[in-house]
Image (tube, rainbow, N blue to C red):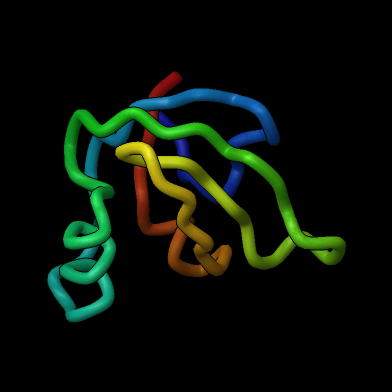
Amino acid sequence: MSALAKVPIGSKCRVVAVSGADPIAQRLMEMGLVEGAELQVVKLAPLGDPMQITVLGYHLTLRKTEAARVQVVP
């Protein structure tokens, strides 16, 4: 299990958990980052932040600090 922020470009993975019980964690789950959701890292910005992923058939852009809260498995 690792953080989404550390997943390389092009890799597919599955969400295991979103850490925290604050509004940011709630918003991440509302955007589709729920347990069992499959996602793929599409690209990173030139300086590495933010990152673009696909989840539930749409593109989503996350800051590295937000992506670090999402635990995934390959």
